[in-house]
Image (cartoon, rainbow, N blue to C red):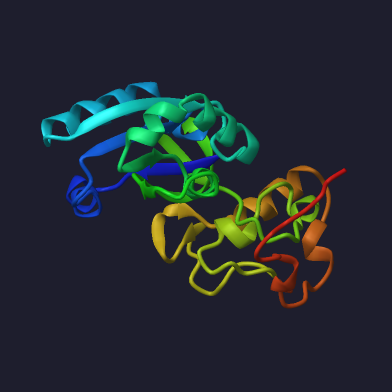
Length: 214
């Protein structure tokens, strides 16, 4: 899921300058799990906006704000409150903000920063595991992505800075390539170590991405 956090309030105030009526949008998926843009956070944001002298015309928490059609449907269901607002404050990841922006000509203010595609360790603790590079070699690396988990994104083993299984960029971090080697060894296979991996072809990472899976 997309890991996000709320922007600094001073930054939001700058974008809110001249905007007195605001409609709030949250996301029931990733932003809710991150506690950055779910029901509770939307309510807290409303309280803060009111404390700054602004009026909140309404709010909605969309099941998945990145779902373009669903976002449009939920905005239409709140047409009156949206119409009264000077701006929409959107508490979702960047994908959600762009879903909302595609359905309104009003000013859209993103209230969150999207940090990375992450896994959940436990509430409030997230780990970046995937860089969406479009060319997975996870089948050869025992399910550990070196592009993301190696500080240098190396594809052919650890660098010279690895020491006692720890990364030279942060000695508290395990070296991704040591983890790959150890897991492959436990599985009794060589995996990626059986070949030389060529330089990464970033052309597999299509930008802007647009895919039809079926």
